[in-house]
Image 1: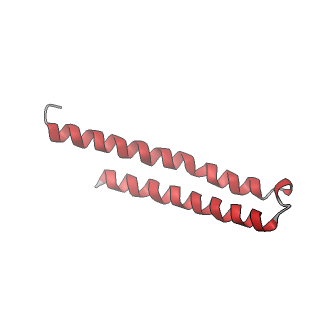
Image 2: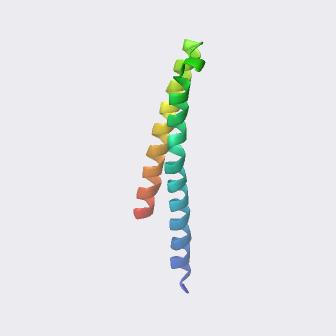
Image 3: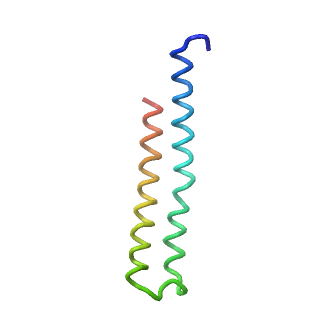
Length: 76
C-alpha cells in the first residue's frame, strides 16, 4: 500500500466495518432489556415498565439502523 489514498481508504473502511459490526452485536442487548422488563419482577411500576420497553425498542431499532448506514457508507 504505497499509495496514501489507498491507505486512507483502507483505514476508513476498516473503521466503518468495526463500528457497523459493533452496533450489530450490541443491538440484541437492547432487545434483551425489553424482554427482561416484561418479567413479573419488573412489572410493579407499569409507567416505568412501558418507558423502558419504549427505550429498549428504540435503542434496538437505532443500533440496527446505524449498523446498516455504516455498512452502506463503507460499500459506497
